[in-house]
Each structure stands twice: as C-alpha cells, then as structure tokens.
Length: 536
Image (tube, rainbow, N blue to C red):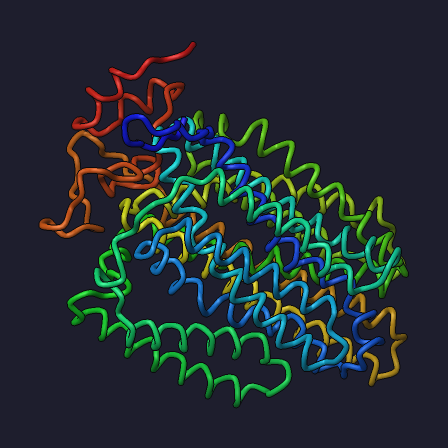
C-alpha cells in the first residue's frame, strides 16, 4: 500500500494500492494510444467533410506525431525535475482539452492545430509513465507483472483504436472519435489526482538545461517532420532536413558533454542493453506500425471492407495480445529470460509480415489476413514486454523519467519511419503500375505486397541485431563494472540490477528462475536473492 505521513492528530487519508495506481496509469496511456490509431479508419470521412487534399490529409496524423515525438525526451526530464505525477496529470488535462477542440473543429486549420496540441499533451503523459511504473514496483516479480499489464494495455489499445474508429465513424460521425476522449480523460484525471502518490522531484534548478532542451526538441521535431513528410517533398528536401537535424543533434551532444547540469546524461548510452533495446525497438515498431496502417487500407481498398468491418477484422489482435501478455508474458520472461522471449517474438513478427507479403488482390480475410494477424499479435505480445524491461533495466531512480521518455521517443521515431517508408513505397509502386495500364485494385495490392516485403526485411534486421547485441554474457563469475554510471555518481537505490553484464543480468530477478539462472547470477547479488522467499 502507498501511504503518506501525516502530523499526529490529523485525519488519516485514504490510501490506495500500487495496483490501483497502475490502473490509472494504464487508463491515461490507453487514451493517448487509442487516439493515435483511432484516426486511421476515419481519414476518408475527415477528408470528405473538411475538404482536405491527399497531401494535406496526412497532416491530420503528422501534426500529432511531430510535437509528440519531439517533446517526449524533454517531458521525461522535466518529469524527473518537477514531479512525475504533476507532469502526468498536466498532460491528461492538455490532451483532454485538445480532444474537445478536435471534436468541434469545423475547418482544416483548427483540426490540425488541435491535433498538434494533442501531441503536446500526449508527450507529457506518455514520457513519465514507465518511470512511475518502475518506481511503484521495485520488487522484481511484481515489476515484471506490472510491465506485462502495461504493455498489454498499450498493445491491445493500438489495435482496439482501429475498431473504435470504424464503429464511431459509421454509427455517428468522425467528430466522436475525438469527443469520446472527454469522459475518459476527466475520469482518468480525477482518478490520477486521488490515487497517485505525489513525488517531489529534484527541482528545476537541479537540471533544467534550457539551451540543450531547445536543441534536442528542435532536432527531434525536425527528424519526425522529415520522416513523415518525405513522400511530399522528395529525396533532396528530406536529405536537407536530415542534415539540419543531424547538426542540431551534434550541437546537443556537445552541449550535454560540457553542461554542468545536462538535460541528458550521456553516460546513459554507455549501457549496451539500454542502447541496443531502443535500437531494436525502432525497427520492430517500424514494421508493426506500417502493418497496422497498410493492413487497414488493404482491407478497405483491396477487399472492399467498410470502416466498421475493417475495425472488426482487427479485433483478434488485441484479444490475442491481451490474453498472452496477461497470462503468459511475465512467467515466460521469468523462466526463459527476456533475451530468448524477445527473439521468439521478433521471429513471429517476421513470419507474420512474410505471409502478408503474399496477400493477393482477390484475397480472403480468413486465409490471407487472419493467420498473419495472429502471428503478429503473438509476436508483439512476446517482444514488447521483453524489450520494455530491457530498455528500463539500467535506469537509475532519478533518471527513470528520462529513460521512459527516451523509450517512448524511439517508439515514435520507429512508427514515423516505418509509416513514411512503407507508404511511400506502396504509393510509388501503385502509381507506376496504374500508369502502365494495370487495374487499380491489382496495382494497389501489388504496392502493399512490396511494402510488406520491406517490412519483413526490417523485422528480420531487428531480430538479427537483437540476437547479436542483446545476447547475455556467458561469464558471470566476476561482476563487471556498470559503465552506464560514473564511479562518483552511483546511487544506492536502483531500478534494476547494478551491473551491465547483459540483458538477463540487468533484468529484475524473479523468485521462480531456473537453477541455471541462479548459478550464473552475479556473486555480489546472491545473498539478497537467497534471502527472498521462493515459491514452488
């Protein structure tokens, strides 16, 4: 139970369990994730109602992604400084208000501006969630379960958004895909204010590097902008923006190396596990996000599904993800280790995308869409909790918000990159084939097959990198120094293991681990583990 210390004689406030806090965090995260996907199916209706051109319609999505991806790192660090509860609740308020503005928008400009404000609120909320979760559940077994629940909600919410978008658009109109956030946001905000325990934070004077914040925020926004708009401006313009973003990143890195109070402690990237896990996630999310977007378009433009039927067709994915994550994920990771579970999940994702690359123009949902959908859902259910735990396992308590923001940033970059590359490839192939006289449906299907083939290569690359870079060290007899921390700046309280010997050494140790895992554990941690009660 979470409790607060009160002066003698004062009434005792009601306390809430950590699991109630987890429910609140999942509710706030679910709202932002749903909104990121609920728009996909409603795009044709938005275009028809507000008169967007084809390039202009993309900004209904881009206007959200650019501030969301650009502000995650800054919001995560500010959460460490001003308090993560304060950042989380402020983000909920901003996101809910922006959703109402989106819902009542009567013109293109208002909708795009309100979507950008939604991105700001989404970044404030999402950046600190993992840091709060790790702080709430420091005990290894409970932390693994909490991460599994959180990952299940996030993954299932993404697919559920496609269904809700189709249902609300067809039953009511597209405005309700945004207005539905009002009751959810108000309830989540009230619950967060009552249930979450306040945290003081280090204070703005302890690490607010405003020049560094401006550099990295500009670099991230420019990166996302370059990616999501690459199909409109061509290769030359995209390269120019990429060079400018790289220059800003270089300036930020130099600033952080010399600043007395850096926004981002560069030693964080000395952790092989943290850096590699974020890199693998970029590729994994690139393939998965491209599938989710192009899969919905395949059902509508090739198989002729309506918005509601398209959303319904995706329902097996969140059901599969939820069941597997909640029932098997934590126990599977505890038994086999996150490394093996991650590899298995990435292998399933690669297989699912490979099957989709064969989807024909005269396809069937049961034979051509459902099997790869289930493979992708099962793979994501295995891979996402594993890569989340690996990415967060090396973060110090005071840097948990920053690590959370970094993890969410790589998600956005991966999704934006995958969406830009795969949709551009699909559109180019379709345009070339239709210009050569091929039927539009057959040409569209061929474009999607090309995109799914490239997505398969991306997923296979993620699998290869994970196998090579996240492999745990075999020699565990002598503890290795943690290169993620400087010798004079190591805290006594950590969110994970204290060594950087590999992913399985850094992941929280559960009480039902195998004899082999216990035999290979670092020697300086064995007394504490023997003292923990075990269950058979």
